[in-house]
Amino acid sequence: AQSVTQPDIHITVSEGASLELRCNYSYGATPYLFWYVQSPGQGLQLLLKYFSGDTLVQGIKGFEAEFKRSQSTFNLRKPSVHWSDAAEYFCAVGPRSGGGNKLTFGTGTQLKVEL
Amino acid sequence: DGGITQSPKYLFRKEGQNVTLSCEQNLNHDAMYWYRQDPGQGLRLIYYSQIVNDFQKGDIAEGYSVSREKKESFPLTVTSAQKNPTAFYLCASSTKPGPTRETQYFGPGTRLLVL
Image 1: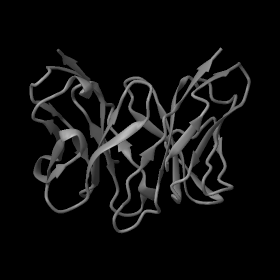
Image 2 (image 1 turned 180 degrees about the vertical axis):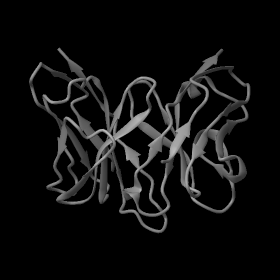
Image 3 (image 1 turned 90 degrees about the vertical axis):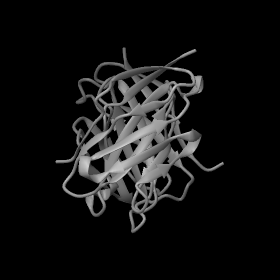
Image 4 (image 1 turned 120 degrees about the vertical axis):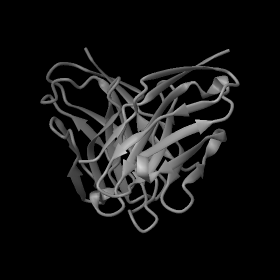
């Protein structure tokens, strides 16, 4: 069965520092990959997605992620974090065919930004 | 504005009571989903529907029921059989899965509390 692991439950960075959030997945084939962000008490907003092509994906708010097939990772990065980036981040995978477009989510990484 | 609306924002349930959470979308999406979110557990799929008058169980369907009588509406009923209903419930929608594998878009959520 597919699974997604986000090893870091909490991460704290200083404003202006770089950020990397880790996402490891286990899947029978290359899945579709997503990163979502959730502010407290809100729904999820899509940051970026990987379907095919260039393995470095650019998203909104200055985020990017790199798909590494050999390592089964899809880590999220940002060169310089802003205080408004404090939120919870979820990595998700979905099947390329069948499965009803069901997504499997990681347990999330809570990002705190120190001013 | 196109989007997904969920109501109410907060819902209180008494013991033995059924409650219904509303989810409406005006995005003309074919597929709709219900997720449950608990702290530290990420999102878990309850039910999903790919077309009107059809729906499938997700990973944690016990104690829940849904209907899909209209394309834009996908209400979720939390029945008295759900013994631990306190959670944040998120509704999502996407266009019909196809070659481009469309993204799921999320509503703002409903927080259900048990009295």
